[in-house]
Image (cartoon, rainbow, N blue to C red; front, side, top):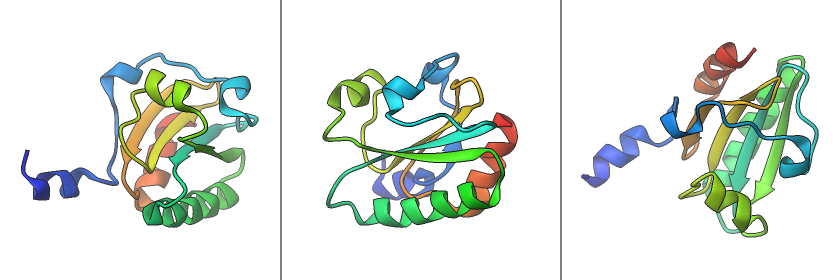
Length: 122
């Protein structure tokens, strides 16, 4: 894979086959699921794109009723990182109301892409 190809894909919210049907609950996330959807962000301490992603997801969660943003420190939750095959930070999972993973993005997502992904979850 060419480095430019990877950059074009970073931040895109897309369906990932291995996540089909996978459910996450409040116990695994360390926070309550949103009434309509949950934005789960895996971050690490020294990740600049993680801070920008936190801001974008917080804004989206604040403007869409019933949507919650949960941030998980990847280093503190290596068990979950391995189980979900999180390869880099930030990684964002979009969960529906039942906690099923419906979308996944690696890299910093754009606000418009997050809002569009929520359309599938709600």
